[in-house]
Image (cartoon, rainbow, N blue to C red):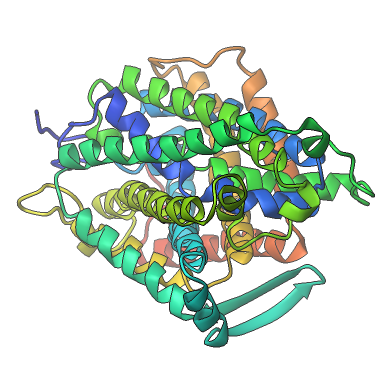
Length: 472
């Protein structure tokens, strides 16, 4: 494998091909997302209405995936969105602010996403043994604040959370390897998570009852717009990761070809499979009953179709799937603070590269440590906060970034189909989801943006940088 500087000058090895890149994406996407969110989606969109969340969110993801693909092919470097925004908005002016805001929010949203996998693993672990489940319930301590009648934010201390913390520490240790080795590990992980999906789909297809899956609920959602938005946010959370390879752009071989293919393949696979997974489960378990099985719906499903042994086996597999997702997410997000540090936009200490294995080990410890903190929060709160803090500074900003890059005349090795339609669909979709996340999380997203801008201005004034000093 060759090793040469990327645009930020980092000595990273370009050792990831198409299969490794796709595996890294899918491993992060699958995780526990679909299995953990199906009951939550059915709670806000009962019965077959829940499929709308997957389908509409899937359309949004495919359109957004084309934006990521075009940007990733044009600017393949460690840090992904950090470089997209910096170059598109102008690296000496507005691009400085936009890239800083991205790093600022990623220090929240990245560990949130990783931490949610650890929360789900802890949640699934209680299905391994009835005695452990009772022990966990008896020793759980919750410190929560009620935000709305159906949403709470709080910290949870429980024996099961120790399992999640242990998995997080194990992931960080496993990531202390060369990226080529990590790419091969990701392929093993993705084969495992796809096997779980296949098992659920086959068992569900053999016993599918359309009368259950498509039964009309007693009452449709009272406020369909907000309910659809809430369901889409949950579905989007399950889809997140289709772009993970962009953060590793400086370590991808032939990125102009590999990155778009990996992103679109990953997105298309899960957009097809996830609605089918919900149908497979709700064709066996009535949707209104499935909505109440928030601890481990998949284990209950397997217990009904195959017995207790299958419930135990699928639970072990789901914990492994969570581990794979956390592994992939930590791998990708650890490159962002590193890239920013190399550009002088973050603490320079995090710009160090491991002398032997050539990966940003200090940045890895930062992201991994923050993820462990978020693993103590409730899953629903983590998902809502994750989506709200990321939409404006990343997804919406990148819609405009790809348009600006095209207008600048910069060579674009890969161009999205039907431009600018995917950009418009993505923009409307992201703003709709953001507006329907609830007032607390809308304020959280706006506050994150505002505080980040203030910090940027204070820092720029102290350093006498733009906008307090003219730049050429």
